[in-house]
Amino acid sequence: MPLIRKPPSGSLVPPPAPFDAAALSDGSSDVRWAAVRVAASRPDAVALLGGALARERDPRVREAIFSGLARIATEESAGIIVPYLRSEDASLRTGALDALHVMPAATAAYLPALVTDKDPDVRLLSCELARAQPAATANRLLCAVLDTDPEKNVCAAALDVLAETGGPEILASLNRCAQRFQDDPFLAFSIDVVRQQIGTQPASARE
Amino acid sequence: MAEGSKRVLIVDDAGLVRRFHRDALGQGGFDVAEALNGVEAMEKVLAEPFDLLVVDVNMPQMDGISFLKALRRQEGPTGAVPVLIVSTEAGPQDVEAARAVGANFYLVKPVRPEVLVEHAALMCGGVR
Image 1 (cartoon, rainbow over the protein chains, first blue to last red):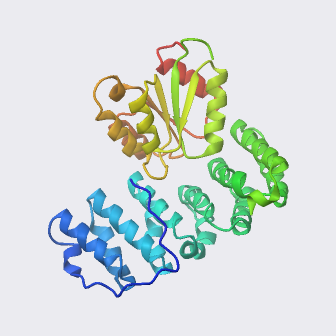
Image 2: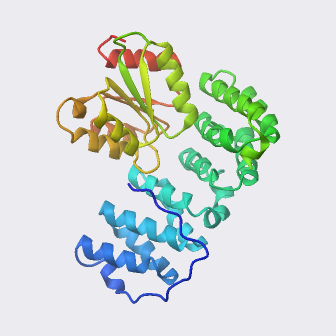
Image 3: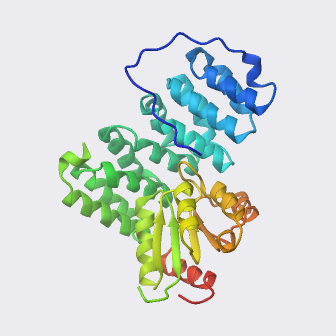
């Protein structure tokens, strides 16, 4: 799956192109793909793209829909994508994750609920989404994960991001997590690595 | 690394996981390379031979299942290289999805280093 590029910022927005909404669900996959590309230039087409995503089975068209929703980059378009983090289909989860990752401002409102979701798989993927947030936001969300989440793998996902974003302010949470999972060699290893990185990294590298 | 060591590619987007698995397999006598996702892994397996791939499922750009599908479409030794999935996804449907696309074995994270080395050795024919 190709990388979804971040939408350009500060560029002039062209007038919405006319498009045939029926083409999002009718015709060949090439026709649907082309319709998605046009719809992606229209923020008012979010609901139509959401409906198309729910029906679509062609991976290339799905990918175009995720890219289109990411390009629109509103809370509404993020909200269409969020439920796909729960999909049983790994390619749908990946599509959702990649799309949400390139629209951090639109995703931010959903993160507090996602990192405390009842499904540990969703919490785990949400830790990765925090990587795209400002460091202070990511650290606050993920320290809460280290302090409270009962799943080792979710804490491990949080540590992987904190290795990049964390500073001295996360040390207390690292210590508490180490205490909670004393018997796990991977978490012990990861916490040591993050502690070392915090000790050796200049503060400017984490901002 | 000993001469003639078995060559293992770790495919995982999590840097700490790659580092942990690399340390474990390296200390176990394997020659280890790394890829961050399925796209990068495909480039590496097409460029050089590996004796074993240790592959995560949830990764950006190309997930482990999509990678495995693409891998098994390759002809010759590249398409037949053993694959050990190491994933947080622990449901029977996840194991079945991986098996259906050609995974040889499935471990659920977090994996103890000795377990990873033991499975890697077995899947490389009992030789490191």
